[in-house]
Amino acid sequence: MKYVLITGGVVSGLGKGVTASSIGVVLKSCGLRVTSIKIAFIDNLITDSRLCLIDPYLNMDAGTMSPFEHGEVFVLDDGGEVDLDLGNYERFLDVTLTRDNNITTGKIYQSVLEKERRGDYLGKTVQVVPHITDAIKDSIESVARIPVDGKEGPPDVCVIELGGTVGDIESMPFIEALRQLSFSVGQDNFCLIHVSLVPVLGVVGEQKTKPTQHSVRELRALGLTPHLLACRSAQPLLENTKEKLSQFCHVPTANILSIHDVPNIWHIPLLIRDQNAHHSVLQQLNLLSIALPPELREWTKRAETFDNLTDTVRIAMVGKYVGLADSYLSVVKALLHACIACSLKPVIDWIAASDLEEDSANSTPEAHAAAWETLRNAQCVLVPGGFGDRGVRGMILAAKYARENKIPYLGICLGMQITVIEFARSVLGWIRANSTEFDSQTPDPVVIFMPEGSRTHMGSTMRLGSRKTLFQTPGCIASKLYQNEVYVDERHRHRYEVNPDVIDKLEEAGLKFVGKDETGKRMEILELPGHPFYVGVQFHPEFKSRPGRPSALFQGFILAATGQLEVHLNKLKNGS
Image 1 (cartoon, rainbow, N blue to C red):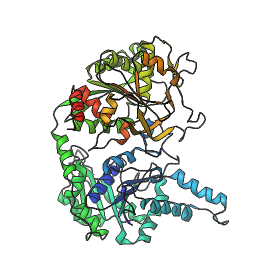
Image 2: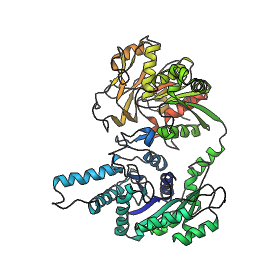
Image 3: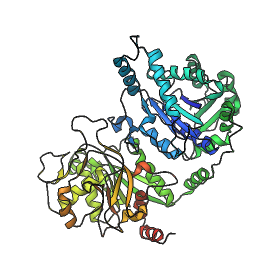
Image 4: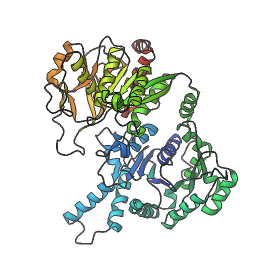
């Protein structure tokens, strides 16, 4: 097994994840089977033309973390709740990861302590070195050999991203484990790429190399020496900057990469290829004899297409966590994929759901007025998932506005439940209709706690992972978009769902549940006949969206917003 380790220095947030994903993309384009592991201050691990993420937080997984603190929770096919970086890996490398590819400090310590309780260590003193570091190495090596590309046999290369910055106390056991790993596998099987910052001080206007010098010195003091430097900067690195870095960091000039700002992240693999980084990596790993020239025509076309888009579509995103865009990262990416497929550039208008509520008119009238103006100017409305009752009344108002004014609407998870609550109140006249999540005493519980979950434990207790949804109505919009009249597999993450006892009354009033689970008791997809596009789904279609293969529902949503849905459906019907 060949390993490529990506580390970071100076500051966090330099884009190690995108760099690691891009390295994986370029190596994969050279005909290699690639797997990835990210060791970061988050908790994940991946393999096989994919990335593995190892995170030094003590949580068992990302499932209980606040979106405000850690961004969205990404859900895998097998129900693993992982860091959003794994979503980036799946999207870039077009692979399907598993919870086995997710390593956290919590998981490592739990495994070691369970062994200690069983007596596996035969009375020895259990320590960070060697027991924790051995557990980390064992996890990396075992996961790195798991194929995720549908083929048999281990991958050729495993890309590992070490999260955080060099010197962080949380990552010390991981760095020591990686030092030991690099020694045990040999220099021809290990390549280290260090991502660092080359800032420009406004007063001087000079690219400063000292932060990177200190970062590399710290890394070398810990026993790891970089073979390549990936330097983040606003502008391309100057030649004298590269020469200075080469002199003081002991890295050849040809191996110092300029990862400067680009119009969109799809340019990064192209940037890496254009600087022959793949050649340096392949040479270090002794793989030049089996690698092919990188084939990135699709990436080039995608990057250039986005740069040249001029027509836009305005999307109102009405949510609870709009203060942090990463809280809805997969939704944003799915919108981007769909818009590019429709030759459009997305303009996302973020609306805090609470700003739409009547209380906001009195407490923050300016924000209230601005929120409603933004909603009215949008071509379509999307209400994503979430938990808790904050902002729910605003979401209900947004759903009502979209329904009554025939504005294309897509409700995801909570967004679907919102549509049911709004419809029950406005159309059926059940004024106190609600979810038992928000009002346990509601006389009309149209959304209820699902029996599959736990009321006492939060981690990994929801309805999680890929589940099959069976279409109930031939010719419904969803089945046409998916081009499958029987079923669709999508990923779930929820505790509450539509109450099956009220389905008949809702459907009699006009709302149609066109998709259900295999038992017929769980509502998965709803549509409103006569509306251009009013769709709610209990699952999360955004998790399976890919740059070259957008989510069918997101694409239909964007097409409806621009009046192109019927034409698209007719093309699908005619097989064109």
